[in-house]
Image 1 (spheres, helix red, strand yellow):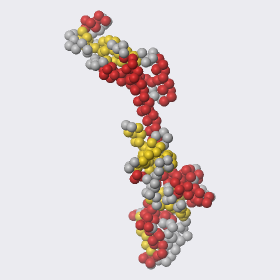
Image 2 (cartoon, helix red, strand yellow):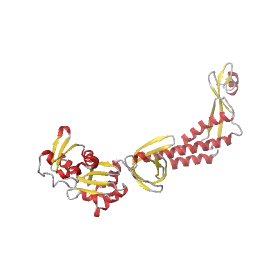
Image 3 (cartoon, rainbow, N blue to C red):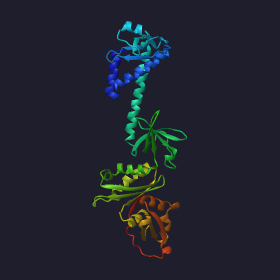
Image 4 (cartoon, rainbow, N blue to C red):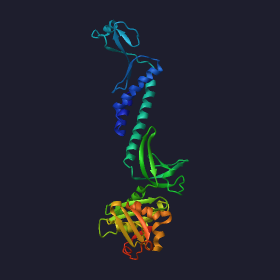
Length: 361
């Protein structure tokens, strides 16, 4: 190695943020192993890389003793004092033992160390970048697939989309560009592992933030999301500005905003409702498209008993209970749905409060 190599390390520090001092210390430690491996040495040695010239020297470290038993590790007091009369028993004497052919081995070792540290540094940078994006969404291209994962090319690294986190019925092909939610980022010996999801409710929430300027700007707030990926979702929104219609903002002109999200989610139906701090009104809205006659709230149990017209009962419950299940997830309330004939009621207190938008492809 030479001064050019030291300059290269300094440049690496400036460009990649990898400390040249730490690199040299790592190279010195690696060279000790290389020396012992290549020269069958059992000596206790120290390797020094000159920080200016790049020259490498190997020193055998020997302990000063009265009667040496192992000349590889020990040196007599008389021999030590011939070199320096100040040496005493127990001192460490360093003798240069640099092999003539050690330069080639040193260069190879240094290259391996630097390459490894650059790789580790790049992995660290990628990990930090994507760890900051946890619970956010990324865009990538399906690069390959196997029986467990779709591997998504994220340009700087690769994301893992498990089959269990793919939208049911979705057929992803190599070359497809998708957006996915980052579930978590983990450190592994092979670099950062980025686990993705296409079914997490957070994906829908972030897509709304990207497509609806009013949400991004904080004028409209997404209060809650309930999702059964590939089938149906419900979103509760609220406007901080009385002049801004939260449902209309999400829908967009001619439904363009919400339709782009529906297309991204492979035709998943999306119900957009207006959030209310009145649990009775909120629960009634959440059961849309069913029309609600009455809601009785039980605060202590956080349960609501809902009355709907007889012909709306199956609509309120939904196919295989989906509508009721999503409404319960959305509101956080247990919902007991009854028909008018079951309850003996005919009033229509909530008929005009059911306001929502429903979208599919």
